[in-house]
Length: 312
Length: 318
Image (tube, rainbow over all chains, first blue to last red; front, side):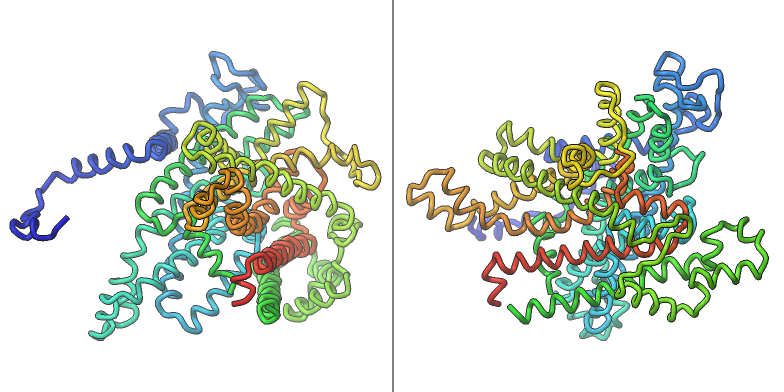
């Protein structure tokens, strides 16, 4: 299109002020039109978060209360998803399990990705020796399979909610570090950052005011894509008996309980696992959609390039 | 190329040294007193100080930490991996006895993942956004989300119902009875293989689509070659390199995942040994097994990088 036509009359003279809520809704509608799957994932994810928050209102029974008159009952009208070996209501435990799983996953991902991202910004901006050593340290952290590192850490610092969160968070640090480092590396060469340096801004000031804001989009993408992984690790730790200790209902603990029986009742093995799968699926789809929308730099092609950059 | 090899090897050795220090720090310094770690707080409180000292010396845990670390490394070099606190067998025996099962599972799952993932990926890329592509993508998204250990549990349950399946109690090695051995490893291998296959299908689809858009593919088409020939001979070899890389990265997923999947199937592999040791707080066993897993992961990724350099002349000659 020739530029002359636009020069005659300025296109945008004033930004129309819409109410914030309306603007957000329009944006959401556009997002879901383009990414139906991601929108569905987001919807299901929001529903699961709601279930977790409203657990005391939704659960038909106390998830910890044993009822020895109703043990190992298959699903019926009284307990929709059956009961376990000591007569606890499976539905209530699945609902409360969402609480534990989401709390652990959200805390671990936010903690790990934030630490990793800040570290990554420092590496990418400062470069030099600090970057070199940091890269080696992250390489060491990534040399462990996730689940095994989390197991070893939670064994060392004792099992418990905080220990599990901490253990999973540590496994997330190098991912945040690597991706955000590469973002910071490209941002630091931009003219406005150079201008900031030229006008005498300290490294800390430039990093927080100029580099960090550029990392928000990739940070969000990273955090959503790692939620699913964190949920699976938490469940696996619980399943292996080294996660959040019983009797706290978690999906992993419930699966672990179910296989202690000689013939595991199918409802005990099926529903908690289904909850994990649906939750992970929802967050993965949402994460893919957010990635496609916010940050094409995190597309598979880019990540491959990153992996290529690793082979130094 | 030689220089590249040497640098890669040096980095791997540095990483592994760092890994061993990390494990040592996690398991010796974080829990404070290792006896507390082994016996629990109550058990520790019940012992007399003399008892504590005797046991510590017995376990080789009373020397200063750097000395202990040095001992550990020299023991590894000598092939002596120490003994379990709670069982008679040495760690080396455990690895030799249970390791082959886990290794078989890992290798079989790798084969399954390529056998399933690659054809599916190629099929998807042939006709992007067609209905077979849609089904393939939906399945791969699903298999990425399903936790392997749960899928394993469901398979075991189904087999229990219909075939009276029982979890294997003893280890049967492939050289003892290939058929019985296969029955032990096939389940975990399939579960882990399908999950990896999902990633491979996804990766090979997107890489193929990317390569198919390039000039040399257009040239090949313009020459009048059949579409199948263009994809299989011209596009595929170029698209495979990143798929190989992702396969190496996925090994970490397999190593970690197999620990839980072995538990689900009740397969007495190395993963279960590790879980048992973690639950029993058997520090020496955990320390060596975790190191073993990390060593395998690092070495395989070095091999993947080398194969990459071998397959791609651009890397080899730069």
